[in-house]
Every structure is written in C-alpha cells, then in structure tokens.
View 1 (cartoon, rainbow, N blue to C red):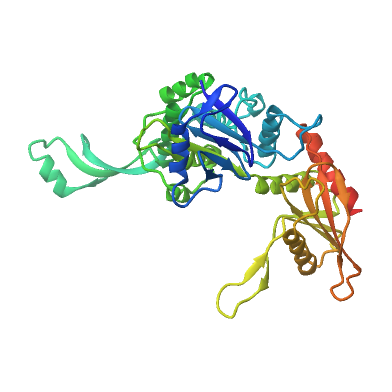
View 2 (cartoon, one colour):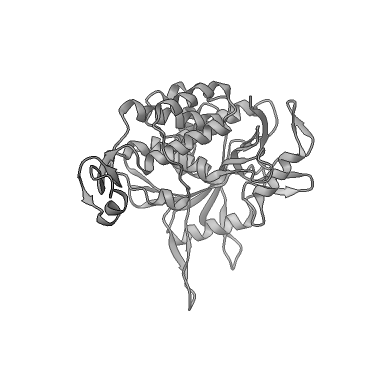
Amino acid sequence: MSKYISVYEHQSIRVNQEFDGVKFDKNKLEALQRFYGENGVPYYSLMHNGVRFNEYVGVIQVGEIVIEVLPKADNAGSNSLDKTQWREVLIDMLFAVGIFDIHAPSSSSLKLKSNSILDLYFELFIKEVEYLLNNGLVKQYRKKEGNVAALKGCLQFGKHIQQNLTHQERFYVKYSTYDVEHNLHFILYKTIRLLKQINTNVELHSRIGALLLHFPEMPDIKVSEATFDKIIFNRKTQPYKNALDIAKLLLLQYHPDVIKGKNSVLALMFDMNLLWEKFVYVSLRKHKLPNITITAPTSKSFWQPKNGYRSKIRPDIVVNIDKHDCVVLDTKWKNLNGYNPSPDDLRQMYIYLEYYNANRVALIYPGKESKRPGTYLDRTTAKETDKECSVITLLVDKDINKWQGYIHNQIEEWRR
C-alpha cells in the first residue's frame, strides 16, 4: 500500500517529520536532493534537513512514499476547505481545463478520484489503453528483413548467398509487413511495464496485470522528448493521443534511483498560477454571452533593442464586448489577505491598459470575496484619473460547476 504525505503549497517538510503516521526519513530526502541536482527543479527548494514546496501542486512519488502537494488559497477558519476537499477541487480544476480529457466513456465512474492524483493518472492511462484494446489496436506498415520460405519483397542478394548457400529453399529478403508492432505500441507497452513497477495501489494491480496479459509484447525502446515529437497522428491513430500524453508525462518525469535502486522519483506537478489562469478562462468562456468575445493570451511587442529580439507583453485574458468595450484580466494564485497587490503587478496592469487600449483592467485573486476598485494617479498632479485597475478576490467553492458560474457572475457584475 502507498504511504501518503499530504502537504500544502509553500509548506516545508523535514527529516523524521511524521504525517498521519508516515515518516519522511533521510533516504527520501536524499532521493529528492539527487532529483533536484545542480540545476534545481521548480517544484521545491532545498533547506537544512528538508524541502520547501513552491507554487507547484500535484504528486511526487519517492520509493513507496507519495508526497501530495495541494493548493491552499483560503485562510484557516470555519469556512476553509480541508485537505480532502482541496484534493477534489484540484482534480476538478484539472478536468475543467482539459488535462484529463479522456476517450473512455466511463470517466465519471473513476473509483480512485478521492484517493490521489497519482492513482487517478494511473487509472486514466489504464482506461485509455483498455479502450484501445477493446476497439482493436491499430496496425501499420513497417520494413522487415530476414529468411523466409517464399520469395517476396526485395531479395538481399549478398546476405542471401552468405546465409542460404546450403539452404536453397530459403530467401533472405527485405519486405513490408502490416502488424501492430510499431512505435505507438512500443511506448504504451513500456508505460504499462513502468506502472507494474511503481504502482503501490492494490486496487490497480490486477488491471495492470490484465493489460500486460492482453497487450502484445513489444521490444523495449529508449524514450526521450524527441520520441514524442516525431509522432504524427492521423485519423486512425488520433484515439491514441490521450494515452500517449499520459505516457509522455509518466515516462519523462520518472527518474530511477541508479544508486540505491529503492527511491526512484516520479513527479507529476502543475504550476498553480497557470492552472488558475486556464481555469478562470474556461469558466468565463463556458458562461459567456453572445456579444462577448473572450480570447486567450495574445502577445504584443513593446520594446525593441538596437540589436536583438523584441520584448513582448502578454495578458492572461482579454474580454471584448460588442467589439468596442475592452477589459483585460490578469490572474494571480495568491491570497492577498487584505493587502494591496505588489507594485510589480500594478505596473504590469498599467502597461496592459495602455497597450491594449482597454477601458479598465483587473487583477483576479482567490480568497475572501471582495471587489476593490482603484485608479492610477496622474504622474504630474498625483490626482485620480479614469484609468481603472480593480482588485477582485473570489471565494473557492468545492462544487466546481457552481464555482465556474460564480466566477463568471462576479466578473460580469464588475464589468457592468
């Protein structure tokens, strides 16, 4: 069984610290230190006898221990969410932005949704491969050469003479064959074997074993980023995309422990700032009115050196109403706790106001519900101008559909 340690973003854990009876020991710290390496990773920073997590959330498996890093944007109190609720919110946000966009029709019946994001990833991959097996694996043409009993393809004369001088009934040829042995299945088979090795959830053991039994045995290959870059999907192979996306994440983020062999590291982490941006964007698009267009980030150049590349700016969300009323929104995943935004954030919004010719702009934060209008001051008189920059904080709701509707309503209320 997996040993779970649940912490919040920006929280620290130290050697010998216990979480629900699970101890974070020195071996696990050393594995994380090796994974961190000389160049570092964005998920956490090292400290004396421990690590401190950053704004990334998700899971890091170290040996048999799964460290789950959850988001946290509300204050401690009677209305704050507990870890189970935050885990469900995080998973629902990932589903909402399309990270868990799967072909398997029974995605709503995922049994492991409340247990762990790692188990959820494993089950999603299993469901996708089961779906592919049930629909029949795609065959492709591939080149093959060897001795055959009948002449076909192109005779390799030199090798034929060399190998068949005493076996004139055989032919050494190069020919094309049409079967399931191709790169897509190599990757999926390698991922199934990886799951067999690292899975610690007993509920998935039998399903992984069944996949290995029914999936054709494939040769082992070395996998890198380039392996996935070379894949081109067509009408027949498009259903493989989701399974291969998960396989890419698992295979490239798995770092075996080559020293001791017991504390391999698998990291499936998400930048919470980017996830919040995408979630607000899809929530607004989900409920938008016909006269409103909501566009994803578009860059504009705003500085040009004499030699070199231009610098660009890119807001998170641009909302246009009837093609003449423009507002710019920028999302920040942090709890202000009643304080003002940072000067850097306010300066950034001033640039957006000018370069996108916006009527007004707003910073969107999670936290206690509030709308604080503000204006930029005239640079010569220090008096208020009509250049508005508001600060909007939004409550977190554990019901994802209600939360998305609430986000839309709050921003619409501010815009009007």
